[in-house]
Length: 173
Image (cartoon, rainbow, N blue to C red; front, side, top):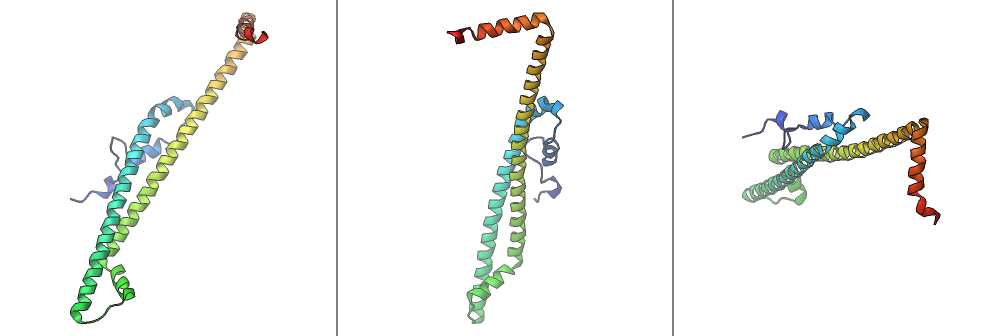
């Protein structure tokens, strides 16, 4: 039973490659949602990467087998005809064999999907870094806001000074 090629992008879970690609980009306001969904996206993409690797390996084995079968058939045909066949002619016959060419196309397609899966994982790693940067920036902004709020109120400023004295009291000694 052949798989429908339009469904070949489905991953293990309930996400497709297209859905993962759509969720790579995010606004800095949606950083909490991005951080919450990133692990699932990364897991799905990693599983997709493993499946594409396995498909490529299967395609490579099928290509090797097709080449061997074509070479054996060409050698047998030459023996049956009573002719000698050179390695160059044998290689030419093998590479023009329809089964070999079909397996080459399949293997090439699998390599492209595998490279895509690698790049998808790299995009998610970059998103993780972006989420970390945005989170750090928001934390710094909140710290600055608290500082200015404390400075603006006299009572807050006195509390801040008292906390600083307590914190650095041991530094005098």
